[in-house]
Image (cartoon, rainbow, N blue to C red; front, side, top):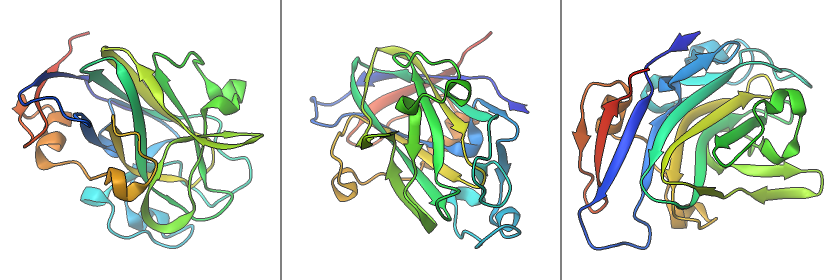
Amino acid sequence: MRIVAPICVAFALVLAPMAHAFDLALEAELADEIVEPMVVATPADAAAFGPEPVDPSRGQFIWMPGPPATGGGGAGYARYVVQIPAAGTYAIWGRVVAWDGNSDSFWVTVSPPDTDPDPQTSQDTTYRWAVQQGNEWHWDRINQWLDGGTFEREWELPQGEVVITIWVREDATMLDTLYITDNLETDEAAVNPRLPTDEEVAMQLGETTAVEPAGKLAVRWAELKR
């Protein structure tokens, strides 16, 4: 298990209000907490079980190792602690690889507002993410895979701390990056999800305390002490 101190993000407007004022990209492998069998991996680690994915961001991703298999992972997760600057509606995208129908899902909770402490146990499909299949890295918006269909998820988030948890559901589903935004468009081209900047990576690592993305928000980071 890998645990690092959670990161707090505080935001202050520096420009006139924008239609889509907030976005944040996170390296999956730099989670605040990773619990096995979810682990950090490289493309070479995946090559033993299926097509080797190329070009993950900064060379690593997270997954439960193994060949695609029906059923699969019932334990393990990666957890991210983020401060939301203002109450509102948000969407989350992931940069993913899913080889086939036996390697194409995670459970996802964002608390608050999500209330299920362990969807691996409850099997509540409210929190089931049907990951778009593909052997190359691609963006997929987190959805609800219900018995009656699949619908894009949106979260009414409060201002302040939220905890995003990506739970193992199927072996071999891969996650490279998370992208959080208040842009609720469902078309990828309209959202244009992106990889983390060097500054965002440094902040996840606790190596810097401030960054001001051009045309966005001033971002202030500080370690939370527990």
